[in-house]
Amino acid sequence: MAAGDVVNGLSAVGVAFTFQPAAGIECAITSCGVYNGWSWVYDGALSSHLKDTTKANPNVKVFINNTNYIRFDGVAGFSSYYTGIQIK
Image (cartoon, rainbow, N blue to C red; front, side, top):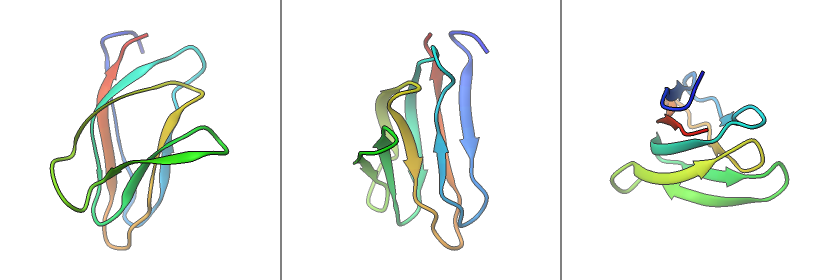
């Protein structure tokens, strides 16, 4: 993949998942969601809520890389997703 390419993913139903770009790659996430759950910014040890997607618009603007990336809760009966663009 190269800068400017779309990045996206979709989890299996009820499965938590992580999107961690390869070393040296950076991405701008523009939308993500998990019904009735949370998405997180994560560094392998510490995490912070990125978005409670139970309430409103799934639009976000967060930059991630191999060090700080995103995780999604696994919610029974629902899948999670992210979409964005590779910037480096």
